[in-house]
Image 1 (cartoon, rainbow, N blue to C red):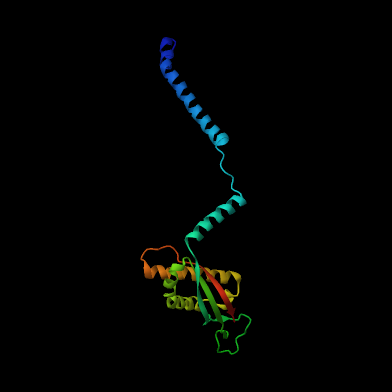
Image 2 (image 1 turned 30 degrees about the horizontal axis):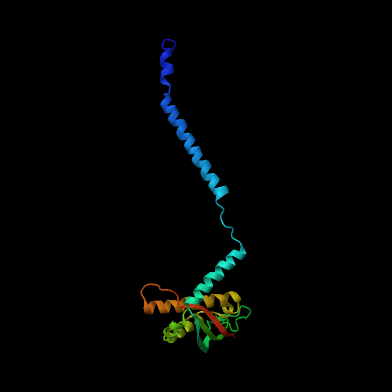
Length: 193
């Protein structure tokens, strides 16, 4: 290595043009990062989300929707449906020949109203009442007494009724899902015995 000292310095030497270009690009990148940081943290102020601003936004959205549509209700008369049999776990088997405890029959008496998104669609929804009642009897017949006496059970039933009724309308009218015509189901009578 001592024989060629000039080769060592030339091998690692960077030309002045390459060094100047490297420094210029580095300064440009640092300036861009600094500018972006300054803009995002100091100049641009993202609006804060507060409860008040969200309530105002929701009220504004709801008033726009209410102006466009006039919701109405379709009422269903009271119906009584047998519920799925439930077993009383505290009841003992009476005979040696019986393999299961006695089934205790339960039923539900229910009346309700469904909210239709637009009053213009009320006649259309009423034309499906027979389909709705058939589906309602099926839904209730699959429920047990224990499911329906809880708040969660009633809430699940409520949402399933709304969903099923919308599915019936969409399946009869369009092969593709359309905007939901029924927005909510309200129980006006709910007696489980």
